[in-house]
Amino acid sequence: MRKVLVAFAILVLAILSVSASTISFVYGSSISSIDMESDVKVGQLYVDQASNVLVVKSVLKNVEYGAENPGTVVEFDKLVSRGEYSVGSELVRRGPLFSFDVYGGLYHSLAKISMTCPLYPLYPLVVAGAGYDLVSAFSGEPLSVRDALVLGGIGISFPIARLWDSGFTLIENGKIGAWCAAGISASDSVTFAFSYGFSYRHNVGPFHWELGAMWLKRLGEKNRISPYLGLGVDI
Image (cartoon, rainbow, N blue to C red):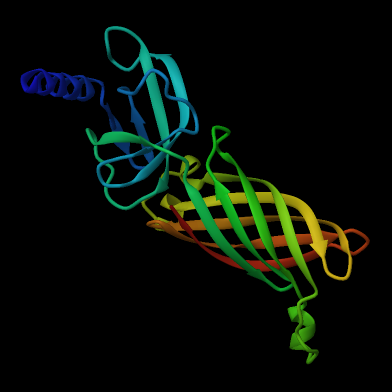
């Protein structure tokens, strides 16, 4: 029985080693593979041997890449960079990447939770926070929380390296993002609230910072615009 189990384990390892997904091509920010599972889809995440997290941005069928027969080429975007990207590095499929962020602006602060999904580069998000008025506080008025905010929506993140391949860190590890969310503002009464923003996001390993502008509209009030600084982590 023990010999049968050992033989079965060896067979499984052999099958896995033959069908293992690997990085086939690395040139600057362009990373692709011609050795992937047949069911690979856009939005699927993988981790390489340097613990970098990549997401499938496109799956190209019947591509001529020097082989006798056309094949499938899978192209990736970088999500989390912890080390060098190397040809031959084995790729292991993983689940969604969750991001936890805190945004601070002149009129409101938000805590945001988001995750990757098959609609990449789109992603769902949930935010909660508080409204206030720092501008009035700078004029000498007391600072107080005016309401609580709970919103849900979608966002989009676009790597700058898709447009301009460069080793400059602000390009290589930078993304342009936008998001919008709708929900409620609760104080003495509950009313509809809508917020959206645009930002530059820079990844440093699993951490990131953002610099952008966000708008907040409460029903019956004027639209408030505020620059904001954000900090977050990806897990």
